[in-house]
Image (cartoon, rainbow, N blue to C red; front, side):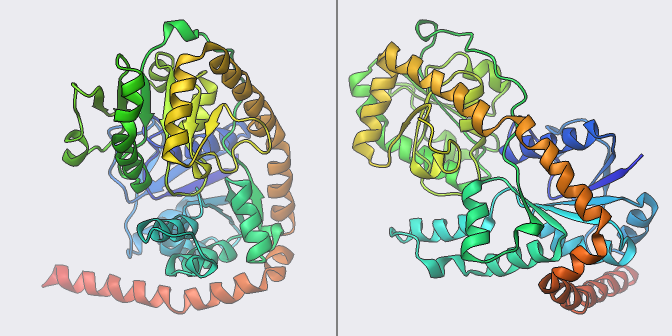
Length: 404
């Protein structure tokens, strides 16, 4: 049996985060292919995690070397570039024949570029991309044998703008296995909903935007309420709660399916970010139309009609939110669009065969694959001669501190 080792930044929380859903989909993909799977992490977020085989590891500790050698993986999957920085060189030293795959989740340098522009109230410029995260993340992509890209926009950004060789990239979005028609009709639903974990800054900014425009929606729909769900909500989030205004902060969500099957419209005026938006993908699956921004819908529907509306101005966002809430014909039209998007953009069968063909091709030609990725070899060399020795120095320092 082949063995996959995942080095996770955090333990997957599919009920709370899109990243958690993404990771569990990849785990399922490898499980279906017959892989034994071990999940290694420094994280402690056990309470809301899935039941998976978890091994605790430490940064800057040579106990990892023995652990990875004993596991002897065929493939090592890094969860975001940070884990590759921390443990990639140790994997290369101790398991040089293991195929190294990076799941980017989304491009963090793109999110940072957009965050900076948002804070400064301007458009993103080319030089915003070349930030410190860009240098680290691209280096990590180059050091790995294959990087998984969740967004077609990000795939094009890497290959066209930054000239990353497509041989070391694979586009694989959220995966939908089957779609069921909406079970809860328009007339049996009520209220608006917003969803997103508050460890993620764009979700907090989304809620602030909703707070600022909600009174204009409520003016036309005085019986409607907006319910805010999200894990890791701090006091500043609950301070926005106002029952008189119909702005209700609910906190951590339970079953996403149960929640999405009772509301009429999802509101997601996402101001910045990257990757794909899990809440919008799920709204399609559960028959919940939405109103979102251009950033929210980015790379999620090709050129197909959206399952609701995409609006960036406050005025139009408010107008379309009210229309979608009141007009059954428009609401049903949006729902029909959702199922077409799921079938044409996110269908699992469209990606699985090509994914395994790519993995097997690299596995069977690993030496040449790495030789042709000469920039990756250069960066690997420098990582081994910089990060490695810094980590070794920290190890020794920690030992001395314990003895003292």
